[in-house]
Length: 176
Length: 176
Image (cartoon, rainbow over all chains, first blue to last red; front, side, top):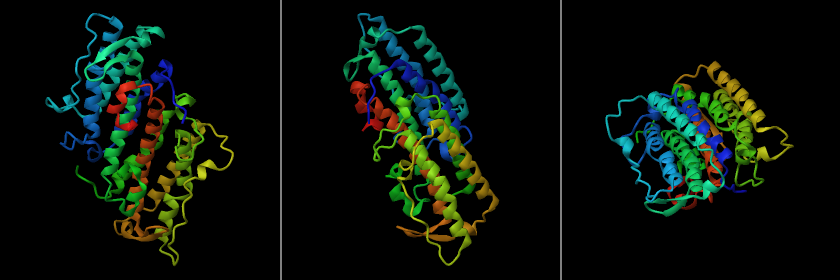
């Protein structure tokens, strides 16, 4: 396959469509497919939405602003990848889908307002584990992170039918 | 996780939404994300759509009708999993999305017209590799097959940015 260099316009194509894709995929499904399984190591679609919301609030755009400010302290705050399991979790899945879409729209508006130049994409911040990373790497990761969690959602749902498919399991990569 | 037994209504929820999910996910993307890479072992979104169309034409509903007929010969025709690489491939991705949606809608209408009973779900046909399989297993596989190929599509697109994400690659399961 031909790999792609980071490209802001191509990235925005994916970042814009993710909330609508998730809504289309999940909003009409019964809770049997989507509800939390209670296992922090095996995220349901409901858990994934909580995680995506937490990322929109604390990760991508916050970190991009640390990079763009180029202040003395360019260290990112460590990210809490289990934050969605805290608190009361009283929202419905459809409420989470709406909240995620709202936050993503706002974040993409902030991103557009920066009118990023090519040079700014090479600016760096300090990741708590990796050390120096560029703005382009952060934004490329935002895109892949969306795709990664769509993958996690479809895999969770497919595994519900792991026994139901009988011998076909061996042909379905998603179950192996 | 709590696995699910096969349930026709729950299955239809997923089978109905797949064409719309794929359309939402893919129709606004540049060809850099979706176009065929020319490698029969690494299917692009374009290749996957061709495969899904071939399945709608020759696999799920055809095999279900062999089972339901309970004739003397209950053998399924072997499926050609590379059929989408034959022929001229002059359609655009958006034409494939429309064709898939049309075929899926027709197939779900055929399925509804059978008014399947619980007993019929236990009827069997003969798979060329596995031998005896039930109608319930065939229909559960149709569902998982949709999810499997959504997974394949997002993985293909994420891998385009495998280098662009820099050190974050190690956190992104989809790239490993």
